[in-house]
Image 1 (tube, protein in one colour):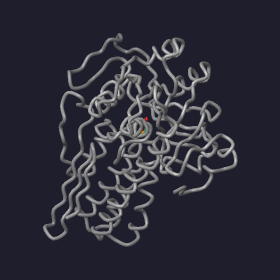
Image 2: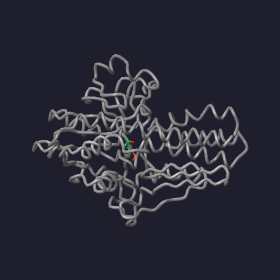
Image 3: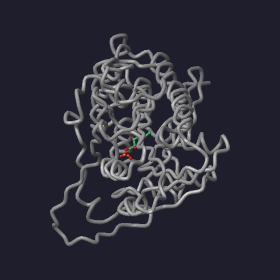
Image 4: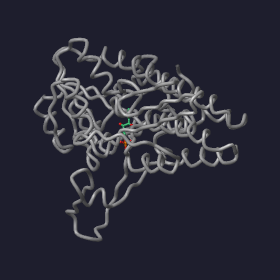
Length: 349
Ligand code: MRU
């Protein structure tokens, strides 16, 4: 029996019993309800990816490879699997982890529909992400000192990965190694991943924290309440520019003005060596309704007038110049090393 379990994903497979169970924690219902959705097919999985029931760059990639393994149990046609592969590949455009993880499964499509091979590869990708999180959290944590007051954006923890997390992984590692820290959590408009998800995770780990709305960050910095910023990423370009949740760029600008170190923490599965710089990153545009109001566990409300023209990019690009260091599972890298081409090669680890 194969059994993979993380904060937001469960996968069980028994070839002898012909049993496959795949569940995702519905993140749109957090923190009020911890409801696990049973994933039965690819259409349902794609709906979960697009509605952010499952989210976070590394976890989207992992959910997709388990989805492909599940599809292999449901079809004997390689052509059908290739179609499913393509649908998953295109389900969200910005996080390159989705494409990078699926690319690791691609050779299997040449070999047919042997379920065990798909399951084994997906499980390997899951465990690799746990290792990546451990290693990059260790490096990220080494940048954190007793007394640090850290600001973070969106959710980059166990809900976004198979392991401890990326930026939040570093913060949790520091906390669990006894460092006295305080975390300021940006609520992260419009979908509130900070207020709903990061606050939930930090409370579970008993990390001292304060929730703020995104537009309070600069004020807090002017009061000298923030000593460091840690964020995650959905795609790091070859020159070090990186995409992350909308609002990250603004946070980086504020940090630069206030001379606050600004760190991006991500596994090498987030690096896109084929992407020359941030201007080539495809930024996902989402529905107006997410800006005009909110739909969630407490119901649906719209505060903007009907037919208001909206703009809703889910991510923005932070230029390399504003980044103090890039923290990967292989170490901490400075701009000089990025300029020497560390992100121009595939497979850092
Ligand atoms: O739209 P989301 O919630 O999937 O966006 C997530 C982020 O932007 C995270 O910061 C990023 O994926 C890094 S997660 C370890």
